[in-house]
Length: 421
Image (cartoon, rainbow, N blue to C red; front, side, top):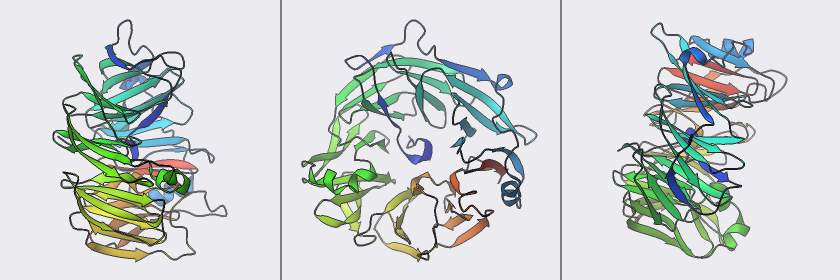
């Protein structure tokens, strides 16, 4: 069984409001999923109209063939996501998601699309399933599972829950879905209608992911919560993280004292990587647990400085201020380190490491303010593909880059471009 990740590498969390009281999975009788409509390739126009700015096309097409593009004016209009089956594209003010892929001639064409008719919606996906979460204003949300290859509907379930419930979803290899509600209730349902529910203690419930073949890891808090001293000071001691079997049985729990919280960075085949912060200590730490919840090693990437981290294979990459460092996840050994000159803004505002795509097992693509950097995770060396610049410093800043098989797609402040790689 493989670990499941959502768009940008994190578990989807959405707020559900205006819903009925109680929590239950039930078969969607009487047109479950009526607000979700799938369209075949022939009825799915491509959102890429070829209008990206010429400087951006020239820069990204210098060493690769341009397959599609779209231009706009500081609207950050194109939202990109990557799957084994192709490239996902959604426009900011559209309710339609379109999956693009390469045809037999090597052209980038629509495979299928789906439109959601509720006021808001969210989604989860793995290598085989695209899961739509409808968020209607006046009814219970629904989970609609589609085949990622062709958009055909597999099943629909209605989820009834209290208003403002935080929901995280996890797709499993057998086609079932695990859902975490408010960090306290763990539900599992499959296409045949079988279902189960367990009570859990999982902190804020920020993370829901596979720990190994038969256990899930649940809990932790969003990283911004760890950077808020007032929030930490008011935090009571207790369980922050749990491992539970897919049957719901508890395996182990991580307890922390009052004023201390953790954020799940990611997992490897043998380690769970956390950021730990305390209200009375200005030094956030990077902590590694084994799969039984025992601490194996810990380090302080930068004294008194908050850090951003991501797990790639058996390595942990950390950005603390202007310093980047990689550690061996197994034993915490430092693999490399480099510093960016203090006067240079390397990344666009809001950039996080976990949203950066891996081009292969040893290469991380870093969308920087003036170039796309291919970071060698073995050595820390960088190779740059320059981006254009002009009198407005942020014109071509990339805010999203994804790398489906055979493709590289970049969305900047003024256009999105897809090239062959």
